[in-house]
Structures are given as structure tokens and as C-alpha cells.
Picture 1: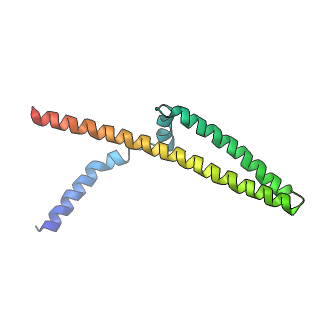
Picture 2: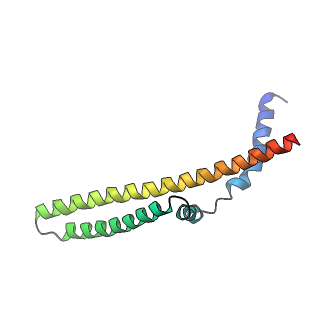
Picture 3: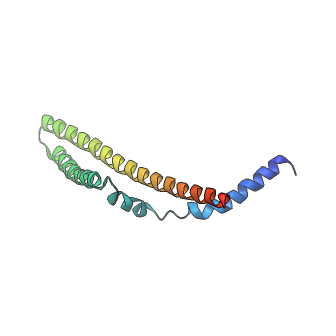
Length: 124
């Protein structure tokens, strides 16, 4: 058996061991809930409120741009639509980045606990 076969066997065994942990993710809502309970929850609620307000403004701007009679009005409402769309994208991006931060923090804490348990078992 050469070194490549040994490496392949070790990697396959590691993959089989890690596969249940990777499949443990339950979906988007299980990742979204912790950001409403964390230390940034007030900011999350504020950003969600702003996102709802931005959605309403975006729909209104889109409607007004399609029913406008003059080109000046169409351009104005079209620009408002684009600005609110960009704002909506930025707010949603911040929420997903916050969700990712909370998920990474949880994984780091799990790793910390696992390492402390491992070092404790080696000392005993």
C-alpha cells in the first residue's frame, strides 16, 4: 500500500465521520432565529423594520414609475426605485452577514468546548 492509498483511506474515514455533522443543518429558519436572540437583536429588529419600509417604498416607486405621465416623473420614480432596491439589497446583505457571524461564533464555541474536553481528557 503506497502513501496515496493511505491518504485516501484516511480522508474517506474522516468524510464518513463528518458527514452527519454537516447534514445537521436544519435550514434557513434554524439559522435566522439565533440572530433575534443575540446581543445584536435590537439592530436586527431595526434593520428588519427598515427592510419592510424599504419594500413598501420600492413597490410604491415601481408603481408610480409605471403610471407616470411625463418622462421627468418616470425618471424620478425610476431612480427612486433603483435607490430603494439598492437599499433593500444592502439591508438584506447585512442580515445574512449577521446570521453568518452568529453561526460562525456558535461553531467556534463548539470547537472551544471540544478542545477543552480533549485537553482535559489528555491530562487525566
